[in-house]
Length: 385
Image 1 (cartoon, one colour):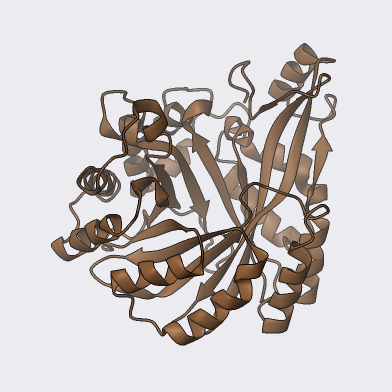
Image 2 (cartoon, helix red, strand yellow):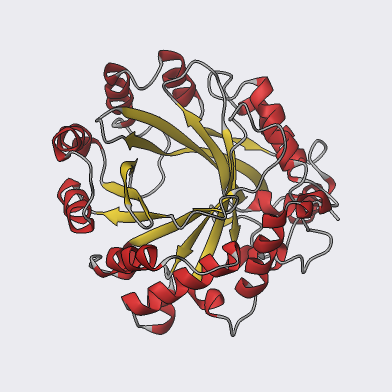
């Protein structure tokens, strides 16, 4: 049962979403999904995926479940007042997601130690998406494992985690060719924590493909990883793209789909080493101009990105009751803000060399203190619905 749905928090933020990126019609689709999601998840990072080279202002919706913010307990339905809408569990894959949550929430289980956070991404921009469907699921493996235990997991341990997650969400084991390619991907990484995220489409039960999102310190690392994987694409147009984007960013992530085969389509996630908004970061401007010149970003979308970053101070009289009660309790020592950032831009590179650009708009809740201290998400004061 949802006491306060996520959609109530989205309503607070609707005035800050640029029409060039998220139209009213697109927001309505997103809101339909968010009405079935517990509002407690609005206090973990969430956001929107916006294609930049198409006319329609359509966006997809994504949100995270953080281990530090009761994410495993929410996904596994252990908190009745913060559960997903029961209608979602009429979709068979949602029950598998709940099973995944139960294992993730269980300290003796390998998923508990191996996964720090999970993202769910809902494809609502697709015209065929009339009903809420099972999302894609991305998980962050081993990020804090080294800090907690002083030991970096090896590829065999990494493969066991991938196979465990796959079985939990798909109800079967992967094919042997896919598992071999997964292990090969893990073995070529200098450090397993360089595997930033792993994603899979829950709804495609017949697919053995995992999306590997890999930290690549520079363009040479991108090419080396692809070469070692046996990527079937053309390196010549890719090399040209990498040379053009490298001066703009200090961090690249390679997205490659790995199953029985290695996909020729890849993604290159372009971001800075820590989140920055547009105003103090001059490198966003020439990069967006570069996207315009390449024909993968429309001028209106560029303007929307420039207008997006900022923050909203929450009015206690206009926000959902759970947040209003917490804000009243903490005032005047802390005030509630939702902070908007341009998280990153992803370039999708097809085998033909054709490019596509997508922007990822991030939103984070923050308690800002009068002594210039801050607490992200729900802070240390307990779950908020």
